[in-house]
Image (cartoon, rainbow, N blue to C red; front, side, top):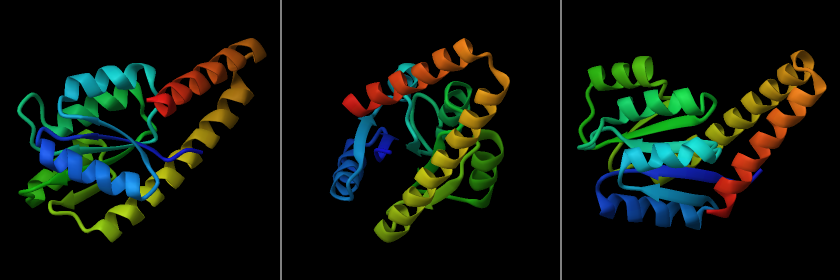
Length: 159
């Protein structure tokens, strides 16, 4: 499976630095400074892992992840924040479904490890969804579902 990540941050310097680091680690990266545009992308592209800033002008990272969860519930979510407190972490995990909360500036080794774990987590959930759907869906419905997943993943990989 390709290592595909989407990153969202309103600070273009952070976005560029993060993208550069991830590309050097072998990730294919789709970057957005606008969370609404990122959600539009997620409507038609399957993204295994998403990194979003906690504080953005248009919507918070928590709000972004809540919307993303409606579109792609198995996506692994990492939140970055320059000013983190305990309440922010609790809010991000409980309301946003965030798996990992990291402070800016991030530790590159920890981010790499979390992203590897996130991709493994995504693959496991997709295998489980595949097995469940194969079991409960009629053959034609399963084929259509599976083709849809492949189409969305290929679309993300071609960006």
